[in-house]
Structure formats: C-alpha cells, structure tokens
Amino acid sequence: MTIAHIDETRLETDTGYRFGYLAEFIGFGKDDIDAIHSAAPHLGPLVPALVDAVYDKLFSYDATKRHFVPRQSGYDGPIPEGLDALTLEHPMIAFRKQHLGRYLTRLVTGEYDAKMVDYLDMVGKIHTPEAGSAELDVPLVQMNALLGFVATAVTQTILSFALDRQTESRLLLAFGKLLWIQNDLITRHYQLVA
Image (cartoon, rainbow, N blue to C red; front, side, top):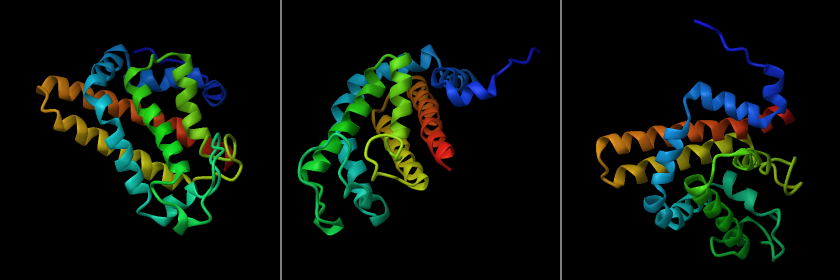
C-alpha cells in the first residue's frame, strides 16, 4: 500500500487543497454531488420551512439569539434595541433568513468548484470577527450546535421523502460527508483566532 503525501502546512493556507484532501479522505465525490443535486426538487420547496425551523431553534436560547442583536454584515436597516426587542419578524432576521435560504439552496444546486469551496469556507469565517461584522463573534459551541441541528433537520427531511432504500442511503451519506467538510471549514477559523 502506498501512502499519500499531504502537505500539512498547505492544508492551513490553501482552502482548495484542504477541501480536496477532506473530500478524498471522507470519500466525498461526484456520486455524492450527483445525489445532492438529485435532492434539489425535493429539498428546494422545503427550504423556507427548514429556515424557519432553524431560526425557531436559534431564538429558543439566549446564547444563540444574542448574536442577532448587533448589526449584521450587509444589513443596512434598523437594528433591535436589545434581545427582548428582537423578534422573528424583525427586518434583520428576514435578511438573515434569506442568507440561510440561499446557503441551503446552493448546497443542493451549486457546482462544487473553487467558488463553492470559497463559499463554504466563508460560512465559517463570517461568524468570526475575521469577516463580516467586527461585533459578530459566535462561539464555536454555538456553531457546532447549529450545524448539528441543520444536519438532523436535513436527515429528518430526507427520511420523510419515503424514497427507496438505496436512494435514501446515498442521500444521507452524501449530506453527512458534505456537512462534515462544512464543519471543518467552520472550525478552522476558530483555530486561527485561538
């Protein structure tokens, strides 16, 4: 058996190289991407409900809700006066929900190319002071909780489709691999600032 050489320094500096390594190691490839894309007609119409479920969960804990009080990057409207004034109907939350909706849609429709890799990496970075709002610094535990909730919601949604066992398994495995890669591309930004 031959051992592949991995440039560990490059893993920390080249996001495309890191993604390629993770994808190869985990076994995330074309068949997984095809499976994810095949889910678009099923998952696409459910994105608004998934987004609402995520925000209902985020608003059920002060530790997660508090991160929506400061001005969000790219949002120019009114900001809430405090945690108690922030509602799910606030214009800034509508703005954030649009971002999450685009993210979920892009996962099932986007090409998994260099732009997608940069986008997945930015998902992690934007939740730290490194990018976006300097006031926004979401602790890693909250990001892990969120991604775990999203993974569970996606799994439950796929299971609700009553697909044949082989298709269901392909989808669950593909999304599992993708979300592990996403988790790494989130976590890496916390290691850099630690």
